[in-house]
Image (cartoon, rainbow, N blue to C red; front, side, top):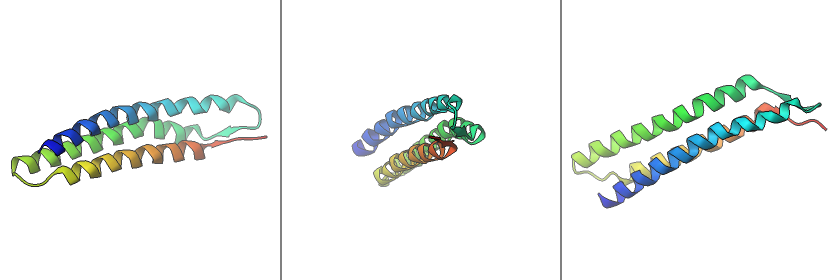
Length: 106
């Protein structure tokens, strides 16, 4: 139970940082004004807006699953680890999508 609570607190902190980091990725589109650079602002905007929502959904789903398992007195810390890994995957997926939306010229 203690491990689950500690991992859920870590997941909550990680979710706040990852959500803020995804929003911070919108600053990458400031290089679109440079001659030779092209940007897919539709893809970038979609990533910047849906990324934090996906992080929040992972957080809420992990909290619900872990609390329900704790109430039933079952092992739940592995689900908290899966939630942490899922938030990391969403964050790096957002980075890859934003990076693919910007093409640097010469």
